[in-house]
Length: 404
Figure (cartoon, rainbow, N blue to C red):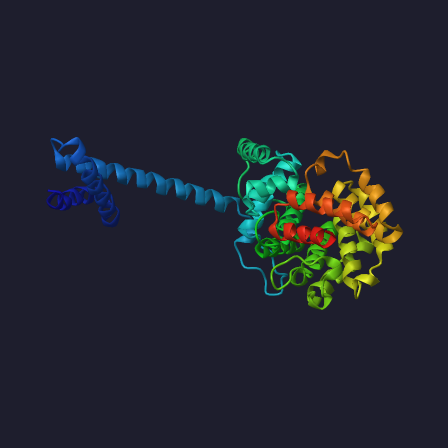
């Protein structure tokens, strides 16, 4: 029956002014609906009329959708500046065009959100991190982070946030959150918080790519340049951070001939150019620390006094328990492990480090340097239990075994 009725229905639609192609598509949808519904609901009194009615409704829906799309396209054209509709002159400077990922990055850093929510949402939506990985980056429970991300999405919707290229003033307004997001994405890629691999090269690569784009948009911003330099100088060490079996190799034991000279050269040049002409910020200081490490021919040649001074400056500008832990290591290399242990002791009550493996690992390392192998072994084992990264856990267990 359907085969017999199809040309009759098509003819009726075409006679009423529908285009042939559109009418044919509508008839096919009506036939499909009939094949699904008639066996269940029974044959209608007027099968042909039923098919014509359903097909006509499909045509009407399609016309409305086409009209709405045309209105949206016309509105978009009306909002496009006239000079964007013509080709630039041959001698004009090339215009940087954001890709969708960078546009999404700035959207997630909407001013309606608090800075922690901006970072969390962007890590999840742009960086591709799981909620658990984002929670570990913030040192908070996974359930709390899940609620924060859900609330962030709702706030953007309520504030009317939409996907699109931002004006220059809006970009600057959201820049701090964007840089923090890129920094955390890179860190998660450089030392994965969980899983069997130490690195997630796709994350470090994406963080560097996006930071390069932000720098092209804001070439005179010192912190953008500092962050890019920090990433390049840190990424340069990646080939030497693991052995043939994937085991973690600490900085002091790395074969520096395996460090990427091209990234070191680019990073050092970038931070050297940036520091004298910019207001100094945390990313520039961290890049300067990485440059001091990169310029040492071997671990014994590291200028630890300069590194310690830079960490002191970083603590004054942006206090953070992880910065203090790093300064404790530098202090131990300058003044001895006991001085480093005294500084670590000041963090005993800091809830941001409660349960974090790095706190136990740094203390264990300094206890080992101080000649207390039993306490160091206990600290390494405690750090290993707390670590969710398999390579880091194995490294910490190996350090404990050496002292056993």
